[in-house]
Length: 199
Ligand code: AMP
Image (tube, rainbow, N blue to C red):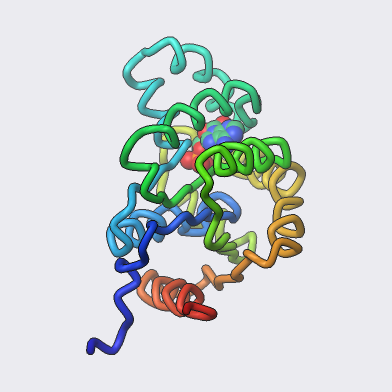
């Protein structure tokens, strides 16, 4: 028996949401965890950036919004997510990164899952101090990461997304993860948080 439990063996697959401010490192962790749990990582930000890069109708609609750090509208995001979570691979579980981001989106996700007779297993909140987040963003230097946009994305997070913390905490799903550590340490915390309360 390996020292670390094989989290990949859960019957029915894992359904996990990553929550947290931009540059908390949750995107990287989501991809790693998805590989461990053998479910697809689904990043709505990545999907939108890919649509912009490919010049699809969706990309043309969201391009301007992405450039400002604001959120794409809930209704358009619902179309994107209903479509993606309805695909075969996601029916067997998923790691969501960047969705839901508003209370209305959390409601949409709950409806999608109810329609699939599925439930969320956990919501992982990855946090780090604001100066750490800004420093990381500037270091990474993606095109939309100029400092004023970074600050704007943080403001939007606090205004629109942070209310979901209380919502998922009340549902008993929230696991708090300290994102101000090395990637490996954060990954270990995540695995531990998922083993807690496991059968
Ligand atoms: P991310 O990579 O998750 O930080 O997303 C990059 C950008 O895509 C965000 O700043 C938003 O403009 C847009 N976006 C991604 N996911 C969502 C979502 N769930 N709701 C609204 N906008 C989103």
